[in-house]
Length: 348
Image 1 (cartoon, one colour):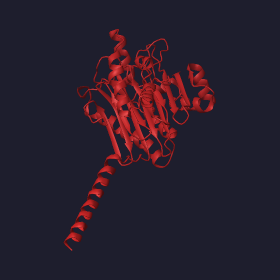
Image 2 (image 1 turned 180 degrees about the vertical axis):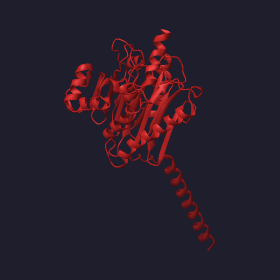
Image 3 (image 1 turned 90 degrees about the horizontal axis):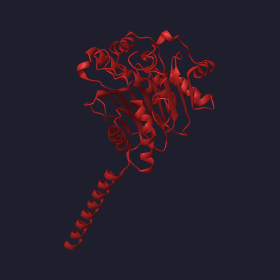
Image 4 (image 1 turned 45 degrees about the vertical axis):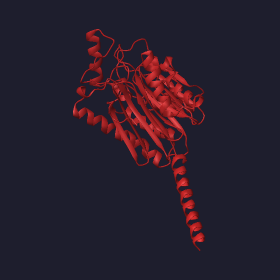
């Protein structure tokens, strides 16, 4: 009888140990389920310091970032496409004078506004881009139209504007893009005979870094990335930065990630920053966090480039990497949301 009881106790203990081992194993190896959707945004990276930011200006930016996320998340929550979410999200930022895109675009040396944009979908790497626009209200829509309604990837200047008009996009007079804040920024540079924009409480963004962007993953797992900008204050000679260059400022591939960049565009072009994140994930099998950190904080820093990027990978992970003092940024996933400005804030 004692022998039988002992055997039963041993069997019971072995069963418990097996269950404990099973539970421990599942907690370690169980793959985290991909969220239904994910969206991440940026409104430019650069010299964004608390000492240069009034409480009112900071509150306005945080409110704008939240409302921007509202636009895209509402589409994704309702089962809408990542393509629509990215376009409409960027519309919101293009229509706000707070950001250097669309309505808030900076001025060139000649006192005009020249805007660029690009968009790419990860399902087939189809892409569209525009550069040097003066009268298209929402350049990101022109980029989408190039992708969907033409055989090309990049259209520029008067040809791009003619195309936008022919496909029915909203055209506005150049005066629509005038804002007193951006005009004063140009005058400070011209008056000082400088090509660099100094830190100034009225304009906390360095002239090289003003850009808006969005990356989204929808319920079908499709990833889309888009970027839009007014370019560089006081730029000359119809200069383009990285934004309209696919692979430099924007890239998307459903097998890896989507990326939208903001920074000193010449460096992002030289080192194909957006594509490099994808390539490191594809060929080196790095995680999104590893790839974005390496490209932003090693490749760019070693070469003297500054700025940042936002990204979403195929599993719905989000990265918001930057090597500047700040970046207007935010992301949303089901039941989860964050917006930030300064370097010291949680960057996910």
